[in-house]
Length: 265
Ligand code: FBP
Image (cartoon, rainbow, N blue to C red; front, side):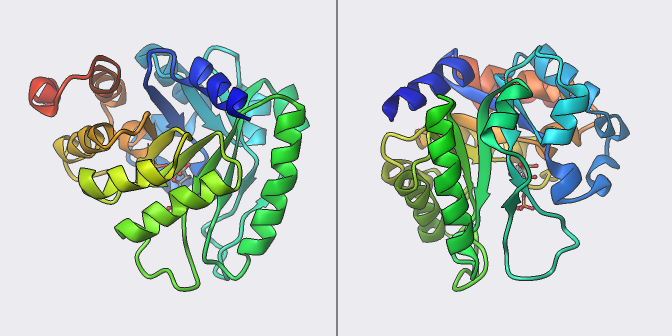
């Protein structure tokens, strides 16, 4: 189904590269994630931010899409999610179907898997069903591949991130979101084993300095990633729009950290 990869690229990487604003933290982490920048509690603010920064898309859960999505930025509906209150073996199950996501205006659907979890089989089974529906509805499937549980002791270890990438390819992802290894050389291996599937870096917790995150972005682009799917590192900053525009310069215009640093200091 390389057609769906092309479709993903056409919508979410119009300029050859991609920035997607992730905003499913209300379920994944809870509203404490919004405290650094209280404006970010409002999904309308997130849409405006993505639009004004010229980003390629936003990620919402079904409820946020239903109440707030206005069509101004391409939408990815995240089909599964779990809370931070849960303390068991990693598992995330669907709360929305592909059909419902399409009716909410989605141009792609997203699904998280936790390879390594004692429940990986359950998520793999559900992903297979979602994949079939995604093909039927002709909509790209983006897989968040986050090894967790089981034998995984370090989620960002290079061999674990590469494994995450390969699992997403094997299971039919049309694009994938994986964590950064912290080094362009090891991340390049993850991009290589992802094969034809475009790779997005998952942003992670807000870094202490802006420069630290910009260096990560430079590293993943150098490694061959198509871009970033980032949440906290953008909207937790009080000057989020300014920072978002700097990211756009790096990702879309290929500017280096040294060229943009003056804008964030
Ligand atoms: P961030 O850029 O804020 O890390 O968001 C990316 C993301 O994948 C979100 O879509 C999701 O809510 C969050 O990370 C989950 O992260 P984790 O499971 O590691 O807490």
